[in-house]
Each structure stands twice: as structure tokens, then as C-alpha cells.
Length: 78
Image 1 (tube, one colour):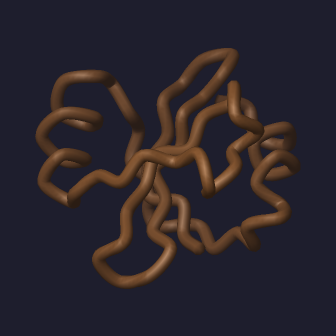
Image 2 (tube, helix red, strand yellow):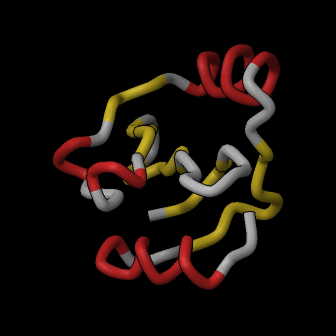
Image 3 (spheres, one colour):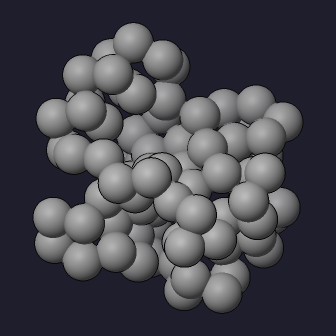
């Protein structure tokens, strides 16, 4: 999957693309478990997350294996 954006802070929220057209938000509280992720649209990501809620776009998107999401967040300084 690809990490497209994140919310900065102690408990970042990730926006990831699992397949074309399949964008989801992943939360610290759920251990970044895709089964607990909320589906979102590209438009929502641009207008709300990045546009209104200070999410940071990851350019270029970062490929991360799903089992490595916790490590990815731990290793980054958001």
C-alpha cells in the first residue's frame, strides 16, 4: 500500500491507498489495522484532510507493506 498523507503529531493518522480508488484512514488507536480503517475519497483527502485539517501530503507516496505500518510511524518523526 502507499501512504499518501499523514496528520502531524504524537498519534498520526495516515491516509493510504490500498488499491486504485481504495483510500483509507488508519489510526494509531487501532494499531493502523486496515480492518478498522475508514474509507475516504481522493476529493475528501484534498479538500478536508490536506485543505482543512493540516494533513501533510507525502510526495512521492511512500510504499509500505501493511504489516510494517507501525514501524513506519515509529521510525518517522511526524
